Structure formats: C-alpha cells, structure tokens
Image 1 (cartoon, rainbow, N blue to C red):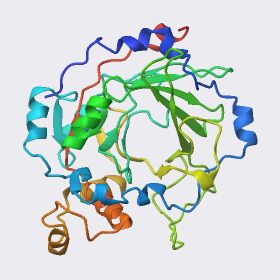
Image 2: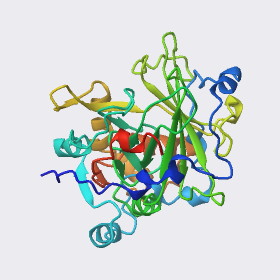
Image 3: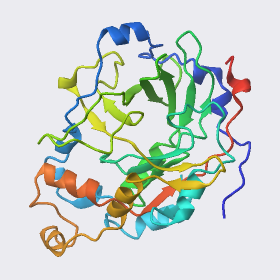
Image 4: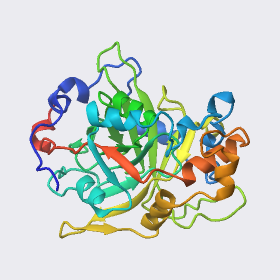
Length: 336
C-alpha cells in the first residue's frame, strides 16, 4: 500500500540559497557560448566506464549489483538505519506504482521527464531507477536560471547491498540544481551539498536526442531503442560545465523510460525498455559464470570489460528507495 503524499518536502526547496548557489565553480549557463562550442555526445557508444573495473581492487565482487558480500549486514542496516526504507522488486508492479505516484508530481516537471520512470542502463554504480516527477520545478524564463531542484534521497533507487547502502547514505544530503537550454536539447545537472562559497558542484549533462541522430555500437550496429526525444547522459568534466571534448569523455549511457503514467494516472510499461530491464533484473547467470567467479565472489579471471558486461547484464531485482512527498508548488518557488 502506498503512503499518502505529505507536505513534508525538503527544506532546501524553499531556501533561496539552493536556487541561487554561490559554489566556487557554479555557472549560470551562457547557452549561446555553449552552442558555439558545438557540443554533441559521441555517436559511437563505447562508454568510458567499460574500463572502470581495472586493478586488483575490483577482483572481489563487492561492487556487483547482486553482491552477497557481508550478508546479512546490508539487510540488517536496511532494517535499522536505512536512508531509503522502501524495498520492492523490479519484477513486481508495486515498485512502479510507488515510484510514479500520481499524487506527488510537480505541474512544471519538464515533458522529457514528466510521469516517466527512468532506467540508468549501463550505469555501473548501485543505482537503477529514477523519477524526476516529485522534484521542485519552476518556469523556464528568458534568462539563465536554475529551473529544477531535487535530491537523490527520494525517487532514486539503490541496490540492497553494502555498496548500495553506502551510496544511499551518501545521497541523503546531495542536492541537484537543474538548468535547461532554451531549445530544450541540453539539461545540465549539478550535484552539491553546500550552496555557499565553500561548496563545489559536480556537473553532468543529459542530451535530448534530435531528428537525424543515429547512435551505433563500435562494430557499426545501430542502437534501435534510441529515438528522437530519448536521452543521452554524458559527463565530460565534473568541475567545468563548458568542457565538451569527446576525447575527454568520462561517462555515457542511455537513460530509458521503462514505465510511464498515462492520462488516467495508471502505470504503463514501455517496450522494449521494460522487457530489457526485466530480463537483466531476473536472469540467471550461467553455470560457467558461477564457476569462473567462485560462486560470484571473485573476478580474477575477468578483464575490466568482462566485469563491466557482467555488472550491467545482471542488475539487482530488489531495489531500495524513499517515497517522495508532494513538492512545493511552482508559484511558491518562482521568485526564490
């Protein structure tokens, strides 16, 4: 049963300092300057995070989405001191109903996010599903400004592992300021905890796929599920939002809308995205994978690329998250 939405939203949503941060590297985007740089995500999808799992530190499978390391400690932590107290399965409808509660959305949520549950496919950290519906959103005006403010503490799922628990604790106080280009092609998200001059921001972009954009795998195969209006998540330089050199790309994946609310407020599963998510959340690794990983505890026989494929191909069915309350109305935050 879903909890009723409340007015107990984050106090930061009504704090003008978070809408107008003074962080040392904060930039109100000059979108003309940005366009003059001719930014574009790579059309060949060869994500840099494919090479992340190098070195002896990644031989133990503590980073795996279904990791059994230190069990039952994460289960106990989830019961006793959870930052995200809800736990549901990707394979069961209740997760989608809770994450897309029609009573907890902002009327100003951008159309690219509105009423959608997004899967962060090929993201290697222990977070899987995201809803931007209940963030605080306000109008896009003729001048650059922060139009959205959110938190990774709510509407953002993690794996029920030790690594996932650590991530959920780290996300408790992490805020996200959102700027959107006038043409709607670029969405800049900046994470931070301290809005004062002592704080710093970490930047990432989402690009909205345009007509004529074609994305391919390194072997030349077209990625069929990426179409106009879909999203590409990229990181070039976390400290400088104007850096867009693809030779310095740090992270890339395609967020996929696996479920949405229809006009009647009912959850609808989106194909092929939902089926691909369900398959990766419920598949059973092969006997050879079990043998080569010593019952999923060790990856000493895997390359960094093999570890990446193993991670993103076998995600956790169970997800932990916190229900989001009703955000403040846009009228309340328009002039902050």
